[in-house]
Amino acid sequence: MPEQIRQGLRFPVENSVFIELVSPEFGSNDAARILRGKTVDISGVGLRINLDQPIPVDAILQVAVQLPAEGGTLYLVAEVRWCNPLPGTGNEPAWDAGLTLFNADDSDISTWLKLLGELETSNVVTEALE
Image (tube, rainbow, N blue to C red; front, side, top):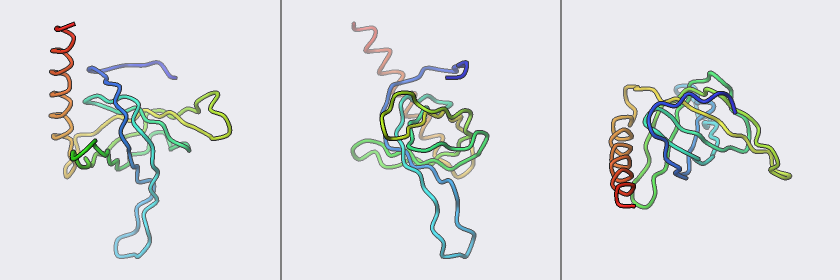
């Protein structure tokens, strides 16, 4: 993995994530090209995800994170900072990628930050009780 520069706390959370690799042209009947993966850890500024194929570094992509239970789905915009193959994964190719989130209009970044704040608060309370 590349040198890690972390901002904020990271939480080991596994959620389904959907990445739009190719958007259909406006007015066309073409389908979007969506890649499914899962989060490994999350923070207020980014995600680390596992995928079954690589994604292009420096690409700015739309990302949907499916929250557990009735949490719904959050739609975010992220830049791919790095993408590396995972060693020793058997016959299936596997990739590990780091994404930086943008404070983009028409995204759910404010809801994301609120949820991460609640997670951080509950984590601090849990650590204080241990």
